[in-house]
Image (cartoon, rainbow, N blue to C red; front, top):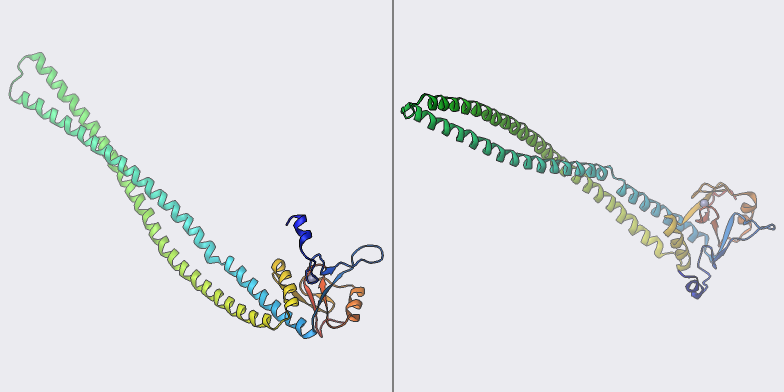
Length: 285
Ligand SMILES: [Zn+2]
């Protein structure tokens, strides 16, 4: 909010923090004393009901934290990351297999060509078409060299087949892991959904109860409570044995004396956690 806008906001006695609705009163030498007295007044019964509201809000905060920190959610995220890695690995292996397959076909074609050439040369030889000694020697030497070439190419084909088998078994392993991961993830998602449903059922119950308590409270007190709750999660805390149960601050004697002396419908706020301090029989006053 711009400062000029802020100045346009009408000063309302119910606004808390730091506020027109409350003021950090100062001791004789300046430092604020430990309590904030609020303009809102409320009967002790209504102040006590704030503690019911606070309990329900604390429950709602707990449920929201549980929902966020559910171990199933973290585990699912881990498994999803692994599944994505496996998917990439499968794609990569499939690509390698397809490249290999092309290489294999090429090598087999080469072998076939050499074989055909050998057969042809042999046929010429067998048919006695070559009679000149030099030509004969050259043809025989070519057949020998073609045989060597055939051997080399067949070795390449074998090597490619071995690589193929290795890749296929790697792809199958990855696919099997991915499949088992899939069933684990399904089971986990079911567990997570059951936990969500349980949390949401408790949340709906607490919200319903909260609505009932809130409906009975005076609007100004509820507004103050809700404003504190929006930043603190819970808007009120019990004063128990001289201590704020919200932030565990021990109030000093001066503050306790002030609360003791105050009318029962005065509403105090803890200076440390800013929550409404509710007096009970256990407040140690
Ligand atoms: Zn406090």
